Image (tube, helix red, strand yellow):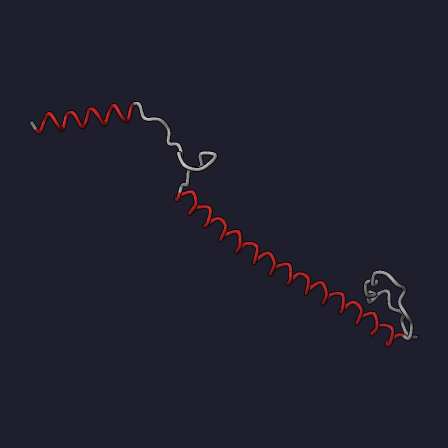
Length: 107
């Protein structure tokens, strides 16, 4: 008796598997199906994206500070040169320093 019921259950399970339709949502609009595995992966991706954004902001801030420091150093160099030579430099980029062969020889 038990073997007949086990066979019937196995046959019913096989028929169900063969003719099974894809999963569909029956409640709500648009047949939305919630997949917890996909949701967990999306959360992990979002957290990783937040960390990358925070790192990018930090890199930007450091670059900005370095840029501002370079501008300050260039202005300071320009004013130091003006005081040392008594001449003002023309506006624009700071010229490169003279090499030892280009410096006038005191004679």
